[in-house]
Length: 298
View 1: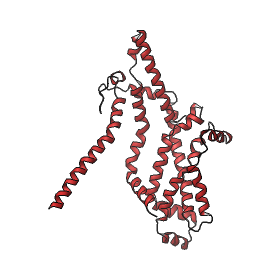
View 2: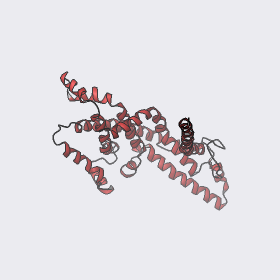
View 3: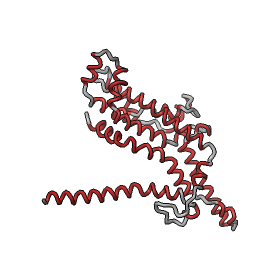
View 4: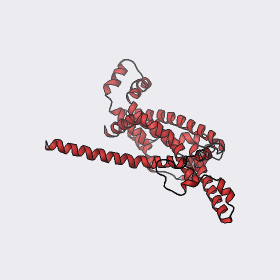
């Protein structure tokens, strides 16, 4: 009876803790959503919680009215698709090869691949390298540098090593070659860890904006995240114009401005994170299972 009562108390405390955790996790996002849907001038007064006080689409209109916005979305989507597919192919192929215990020079390859993980030449050598490789202002500058990640390779390799060796032995007896074993047996059985790495790669490509900042000057190759960065800077300029108008007594133009840096930033956050927030629930079960198995089993 005492044990049953203690379990009930634990369950109640656990439920309360998880509810508080959900509130702490969801409130900032819902708050930004409310700010993005609220009139900018009204947002200045504060007090916005999880619902807009004066509903308005003007913040999103400001974001989407930026020149080249549609093009940046296309570039970002193409980057995510191409970068994720290429990354999965290279990382999975390397993991499958490293998982072979009879691979000649296996330790050398592992040591060779791990060096860039801990040692980086820095931004200037990287800039010079990309320039000499003619990657400046080229779409491949988004894809090739992130095509291989050693940590992801270790996760997939560990998962592949957890699979029964008899599966591969049976396939070899049936006459299957290495490519058939990899694509018809290993990858289908490794969908949890594949979904995990896919999510990591997609998020990394989607959230990156520094590549455009450092290596791209053509507007047609700007990614969505970099355009969003520019939108925030332009919103700050709008704020300076409003302050200047107020100080000079010319309130007419300030009255017409209904966006502020904070409201545009909120709209920017929602637009930039919505695809990932929408995608994650469908991959959550694979994500958790892939991380646990890929990182723990040996």
